[in-house]
Image (cartoon, rainbow over the protein chains, first blue to last red):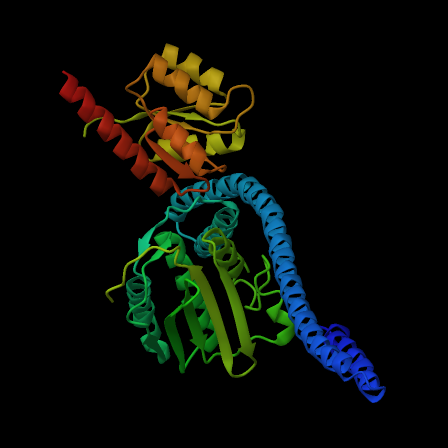
Length: 307
Length: 131
């Protein structure tokens, strides 16, 4: 609520109260009492109305932002699919020509030459880079693909536990500890398991990358009274600068070194969570770490998870 | 599994189909290559083939249209779709039309060889059972 809106009920009430005081001095005590009562009622009502208005405004801003983000993602999705497809064809030719050159060089190589060995090495590198491009186009296509979710009753604690075990094995060599903090009586969530797995895995991988070595990841679940479940992924990594926080879910935005990330992971997560009817938010402090919260609706399905 | 699979490559990218033909030939397959769905149908009427690799996006006749026609001419032939334009809808359509496998370009010759071998084996097994 803005300052102007906040002071309106006070001004209105003060004016009425002043009138009541004047009336009291002029001898109309009855009018004065009615005036003060009116002042209180007007103060309460106006304040309540203004609070409601502010809440509605906030909700509108949130929905507007969500709509803009969805439209942006949709148009970038179309573009990504186009680029992904168009690049795949020339990539296929590069890959095949390289394989053919390798085959020819093998024949020449039988006569042995140092240069041939070097050429073989270069061609191997070309194929390696083709693989890298293939991964990028695959990511672009995944980003663009709008898979319709198939909703099922999901034990979120179990799903996360299985995934974190996978990540845990990988993280041992980097001395990254994963702490699980699950709410035991968490309700089953009506959601799409593979999509949710993708989101959680992405968040865990990002947390690992943010820490690099020696740190902690806390993954927690929490149910709320309004019929939603929070999945919280907290890391003690490098953190995200404030000016990056607003762009973190934008496609192709990345802070990772060149060649290490396409900047699509979090925007894919955002798209998935949106499709699942939830939302994803982030808070972070540079040097201390980041916290991502995925909030999913339980969808009023009854049941309890056994984790 | 005995004998060499006879493979027909259908792709409108000339460089792609000729190099692929060379690569498959040095890997011991009997290979021919054509640049359109229509040319593929003509080729099939003239010679027998075991496996076809088929592109999806081609001018005049699309890969899906060609696949439907190929299956009318020879339902036993195995068709591997090899395309840069993948989508779930297309994949479902291919399976409905009787396509054997779906590969996204770029793919390595080794991967493609494995798929061709598997398709050929399936065709041979089916033919033996039919005897």
